[in-house]
Length: 127
Image (cartoon, rainbow, N blue to C red; front, top):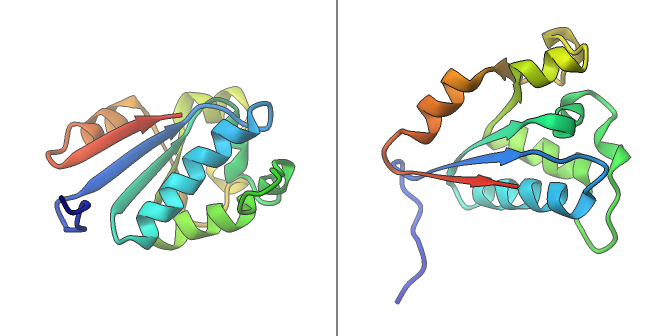
């Protein structure tokens, strides 16, 4: 049995719900997203809860995990080949606006998330 092959119909939507308080969980979400981007999969990574802070310049350095890729490098990899979104409500609760975020990061809400995960050929993961 061979492994999955990359195609235009493959899409991975990942929701990261943790932040600095759960570095392994957060790093895992970003590692999977960056790995999928490198494999040619269409990736959309959603930042909810305290993960929203990772879309703010300089905040990726708040999470350092031994034996893991740096969070700043993972964020950059996702931004280079995928979509990075901060949940609308999560942004508002943290006082974040579009101007506070890294270039290329968008703010969107549940309707867009549901649209993405319901697209045929999509696999959704939550960390």
